[in-house]
Image (cartoon, rainbow, N blue to C red; front, top):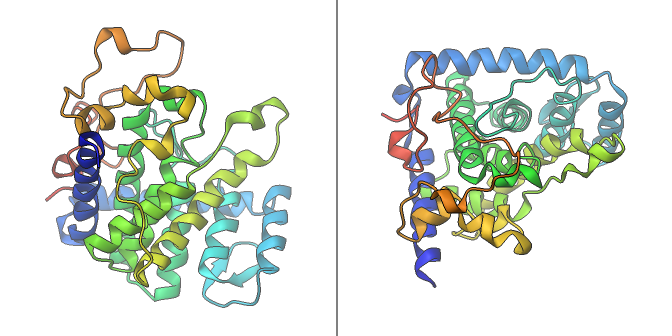
Length: 305
C-alpha cells in the first residue's frame, strides 16, 4: 500500500465513521427542516416526472424484475426497494425541477431521496431516521462532489458518480450499519459510480438513468454490506478519475490530502479551461450559511455534533 493509498483509506474511514456515528439528535434544527423541505421538493419532481416516457419505460423494466411489495414505485404501484429506487430516481430527474448544488454540480435529491425513501419504507423506519439518512446522503454527495471538481465535471455527470456515494450513505444509515459496514457500502458504491456526458450529443435518456442507477447502486451497496460483502477502502480518487486524466486527478483535494500535501491547489496545477469551479461552501444542507470553507474533515460537516 502506497502512502497516498494509506492516506486515502484514512480519509474514507473517517467519513464512514462520521456517517455511521451521527444521530438524529446531532442534527441542527435547520438541517432537519432542510431534509423535510428537500423531500417535499423531490416529491413534486418525482410525481410529475413519473408520467413522462422515460419514467414509464423504467417502470415497465423494474416491474419485470419480479413481484415485490417492499416500496412504492411512483405511478405504477409497488416493487422491491432497489427497483423503486431505480424507477423513482429516473422519474425525479426528468423535468429538471429537482434541486441542484453549485459547488458539487450535482442534483442530490434524485439519487439520495429515492434510495433513502425506498429503504425506509421497506424497513418501516421512522421519519426521524429518514430525515437523518437524507441529511447524511446529501452531506456525503456534496462533500465528494466538491472534492473532485472542477476537473471531474468535464467528463462525468456528478449526479451519477458522486451522488452514488450519497445514496449508499443514506441507505446504510437507514439500515444502521456499523462504521466498518458503512466503509464497505461506500467502497461498493464507488466501484459502480458512472455517468458520462455523451447524452448531450443527441439528447438521449441516459441523463435520467444516472440518478436512478445511482439510487439503485446505493441500495444494493448497503444491502450487500449489511450481509458482509466487502468493498474497497480506498475509493476517494481512483473511481472518479480516468487513467488518461491522472494529472487532473492528482490535483483533487482528496488526493493532495492523502499524500500529505496542502489540499489547496497550487496555481500551476489549476486547469485554465472553462470548467465550473466550486465555491467555498461546505454543504447545501447547511441552512443560510455558504461562507464556510469546504473541508474533507467530517468533523467539520454541516451536520457535525
